[in-house]
Image 1 (cartoon, one colour):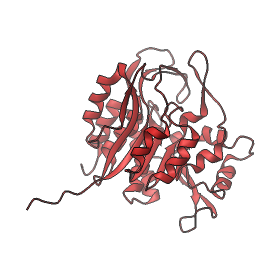
Image 2 (cartoon, rainbow, N blue to C red):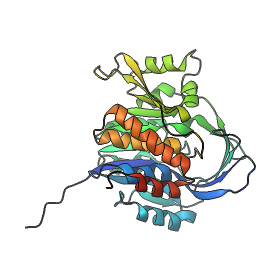
Image 3 (cartoon, one colour):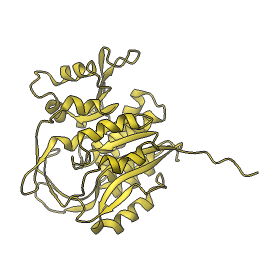
Length: 318
């Protein structure tokens, strides 16, 4: 009798693969590599519990089809790439010019079209959880995001990052408040922002952290806030309380050094954290591990080097 095959749980990972050119303040020694969703995919590949598999949902320009297929072939957590759609036109390409340790000018060229509900409907009912990373900010309209939460049979998590970025005529990104902020936060079981983005979520409020605690009482499930060298914080219901009840803030400082290339650190943090929670890891342990893996990315440069370093760091190995 042949052994029974155990069906793996399916984590949908939706976002945009980007070809990055990263430059320091003097624009010397530019580095080119996959970016965007590649950071989250690399983190999940190294850290996701083996009971789960990754189902990528990504649109890629045909000009980068060969390179994208090679990337997915390297990911051990991915076996089904039928959710990767190759589209006409140029793939997203981003030039990142750092003007300081964490400040940068971002310029976008190319761009794949957003997902529609008709394209996603056949997929989402087959997923046990969904991680969405708004790399371009154009991946999904709000009405599709709202439908996703009720269609996926498990938890949903979104890094809202580039929803806070506009696009000028020259392709430069600029910060802007997020329209319908509360509705975006309610569209997922948990959302992730950085400290600047939290302030934009709370535009008009005197205290962004007070706004976040208020939002939990308005039906927002959980807000994770990355704090750079300060680690991360979680705003959500008290751990033994109901959704929509009293909110508590949990802070998790990092022991990782602050110097390095911060590109992709938020993506790595969120993917590692959510993967840990899916595996049943406690909230604080998941935050600690996410801090540590984001620190590995800080010391690497580019998604390819990060993925190799993250695999080498795993104890015990998968």
